[in-house]
Length: 167
Image 1: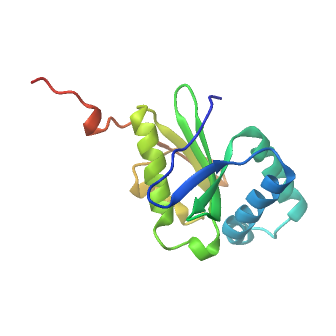
Image 2: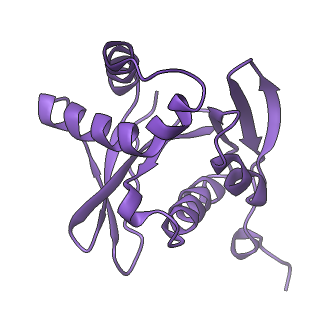
């Protein structure tokens, strides 16, 4: 895994790397529970111990960021730059910040970072989670699926501003 950071999304969104601490783990779990919990509960009862175990494993595997809007924590995401792709995930906005276009703004910002590096972006989501529509609208295409998850990739995109033309 390569070092990952995500620059600010002007004028009001910042991304702070969450350190490996109990406070960060609890904050990120609270965001997951509030944003993803209803989608999990649409299929299974919420199993707190199991969900904490899975979340702890994910938190240990990849860099997590707190999403701050005007200094207030509004959710989390994981962003990782690897040798051959960028990885986007663990994207959870607290309910009070959903439905305002923030998810689209943040996703487009992350995609622009990958475009600058000419890297495809990979992610997965629960099959029945409506967030899949957001990803499909932004160029992601399914690569495979399981009974539970859909795995997507958005191909590398060379931004027009990076294309040099002969003069």
